[in-house]
Image (cartoon, rainbow, N blue to C red; front, side, top):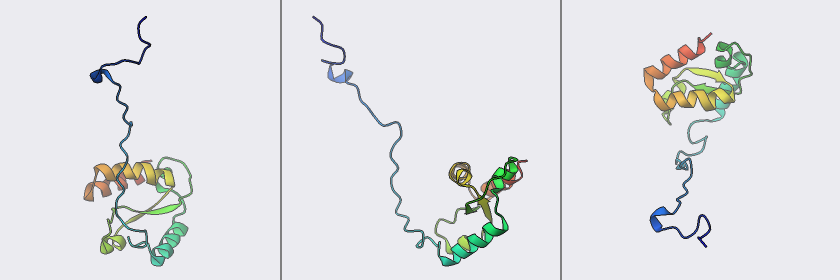
Length: 123
């Protein structure tokens, strides 16, 4: 009687299971307060959201969605000057976590700012 399926394989025939996605290596980037998100930022972002309460990307797509956070148009990466000397956009969580992160992964500097400007005016 032949062996049951999946048993008695030669070493080079063994099934190797690997995860579909590699686990992310945690960055040693510090806490939010260490990265510059202070009480001053809390006041600034609250004021910005009061002036611009809707997601600017959703508005460009013809939808009305409440913005829940203020995003730096250029990632500051801990630079205290760029943290404040920047342009800002009110975004919903989905646009911040998906669209903007994808753009930041492939663009930088003037190209990223041009993408943000086009995205805001996409209507």
